[in-house]
Image (tube, rainbow, N blue to C red; front, side, top):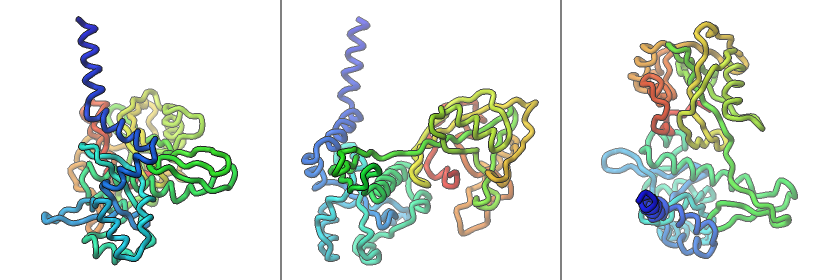
Length: 342
């Protein structure tokens, strides 16, 4: 009876909408003809020199300008551009109904003319994170990362010869050697350190005044997650980590597409004296629970108003929230919460 139940569960999973979407997307990546056909009826996200096109709705909020492929073709014709530009669109996902979603950068066209015809505005990616809903921001971040990768990967690093993409834009192949290149992310560890009573936050000189964040750093070649975490804490603040736990992860498109892995780490209260490396950080300090709670209740500074109070930890709220509650598996942190971490 148990074996029957297991089979039923597996069958249910294999027919789920998620599995269906993943297999649909994988098929588009593997078959150029199928992908090209899907592109003709796809949802399109436009970018101009890596800035996404947003539209304001009647409620005054913003959303991505999601156009149909036919709309983009008409736009290209109206502006005197080659319709084949549509073929440079990159696959980024699909809807619940298995309708393909593509992004396209039209940086060669007049920005003002496109905005007028589409009734939208091209907005810098970091600024757009503060305007979009949680569901749209990661999709826009993924789109920009893929577009940037294609713009900077036109030649093979081994032969110097041009590379050519597949229709989905999921890979590029050297025209001479046949070497296949795939989009890459740089692994980054971001860690909230605690001595049992307080949490440790730091800031770089480039941060807005008063803003502190959890410590973060890129993984060196050959390092494990725990090795990177321990090294970064030792380098930046002179502390030795006793234990750590993984919290959550997310893609982060800055500076050149990073894979953020969020962790909690503990140090001994008896050895919590900081020795800050000022070539790495402008400042680092311990924050009490009350200071953290007070800062979390203060709206984050997003430009155009007074900066946050001096010394207030305005970043990594999901890590801090989970630390206060005792949880180690919070929901993945929204993109906008890490705008100044890397």
